[in-house]
Image (cartoon, rainbow over all chains, first blue to last red; front, side):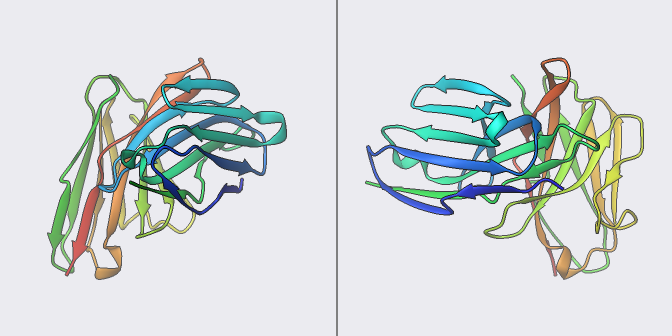
Length: 110
Length: 118
């Protein structure tokens, strides 16, 4: 099946700093989402972005499907950004199974 | 829009009993729902894909008879953990899929259920 790796696995930021999270996948996809899992376990949708670039406030994301990666940018980070960020993909061939990435744990300190 | 509820949010049960978890899409119809399991400090692991009106598709290694999934309507899917044992203790999360781009879909997640089996 498709492999999805995220980097870095852990990240500590000072409030106000910017960061880039990366999601690499091993095969072509027709579906990619970014999520933020808060400390209570709730997954919050950030972006549906199988290709291209999108922005939502301080967050933006870019997926380069031909090169099999996606990036999530967080600018001017806030303590409420802390949590785990996951990307999830669905491969474009055969049985379309959802595969979650390994996650990036972000801690933003005041 | 795109709200998914999940009940109960937490449950403690004795070994050998069964527990039912409900997942509802509140403001959209979901032909497909997914059930995941998450262990502490790990990623989400897909257990099964549930399509309305048909049998669920289970991932390799997931026991069908232990984790019974029913998708009775376009807004409700249930997961029943039968004869639960301590090793079934985990965080169970459902998602409901809403169509996007005509061919794919976007998942929206419920808040999860923390199951503890004593």
